[in-house]
Length: 430
Ligand SMILES: CC(=O)N[C@H]1[C@@H](OP(=O)(O)OP(=O)(O)OC[C@H]2O[C@@H](n3ccc(=O)[nH]c3=O)[C@H](O)[C@@H]2O)O[C@H](CO)[C@@H](O)[C@@H]1O
Ligand SMILES: C=C(OP(=O)(O)O)C(=O)O
Image 1 (cartoon, rainbow, N blue to C red):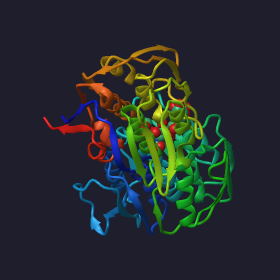
Image 2 (image 1 turned 180 degrees about the vertical axis):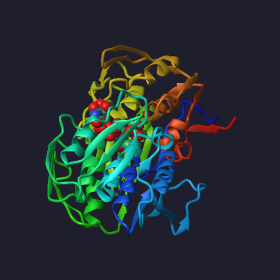
Image 3 (image 1 turned 90 degrees about the vertical axis):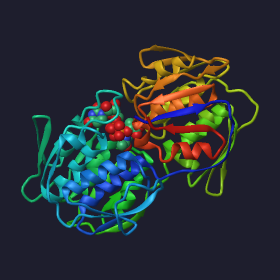
Image 4 (image 1 turned 30 degrees about the vertical axis):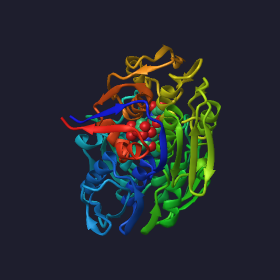
């Protein structure tokens, strides 16, 4: 199994191109199920999750062509991909595929909207909490669907004549349930109003793509989204927005290792809160023509408290990376996780490198240490894995991260991007 070897101690200097966002690409790809025309997506990152979703979509009848060629695995860069679903050939999303990735469950929305039925396995994904699907069930029920759980699957059936627009207020903000409800409502009869909707940039990106496909959506990016159903959607061409989590991760890596790096093809507005926390920690962060410049030259790392929250709050997907940074701060910081109840798996691995972290409920108390020392560590989930890489960049000696298939789910060419900036990071294939 592959591992990543990091030899810490080098500053990062240079340019890091930011890829298209995994968490936007996945729902955008799923939106291709809503039309019999071709949906072309540009800037699709080359990631394990994207490859897996292509297989899942293929199973439903989506024909996938990469840059006009048939799909091939070898290149490692963001690509333009054409998705065409002339007819849906299977409305079942099987356990073997869905269990590996949470977002694959989201096919339930388009399948139900277009075919009137779906049988989708309950999802898997990062082990960061119980991650129920009650909000999806209630939201789709509000549109008139019958939802039954049977042997690990959800059987969803639309009323005769299709889903019916309705108002539904989510009792809790959910990114996935908002994506699904929005997709399902595009083809429903009448108007749907989603209250307490997620406001993440990936929701806005999906809405913009659906609008380009002919959907009538307003309010995406606010907590009330209104969708007027249409009878069919067409194809479109859409560019996946930059990955704000990848952006924040490399910004934190620079703050940790020191140096001066320009993050290209990204946008500060996507992660204001996280960048503000980085500034308070001592990094200099400024906009460039098409990205962000991050520097930390000489000055120390200051302790900063953060609390994760839905957008525009501090993203839970950057919590582990920020904790890695705080392990080297000059004081004590408190990091509170409010989105997922079990997203602290990185704590015990960071401790192997010499970090001093204690947990009390949903808050981690991080006492900064003078130095970290490289050690063998294990990746436990996607963002936890990259927090270990960040810690390794500042640790003395060698850090070996195992189980890096988690990293490959969400970071395109990580070793390459860091190596080009002066880090010693390599993949070891055993
Ligand atoms: C592929 C993708 O985009 N994944 C992101 C998405 O995950 P995902 O869409 O799964 O996360 P949600 O926003 O749905 O989860 C937020 C909270 O709501 C809970 N919940 C959710 C659905 C439900 O039916 N019932 C329920 O209780 C979850 O357990 C969690 O505690 O948003 C998360 C929160 O920003 C990010 O960490 C993930 O990276
Ligand atoms: C938790 C994540 O992904 P998923 O929702 O697919 O598990 C993530 O992207 O950090």
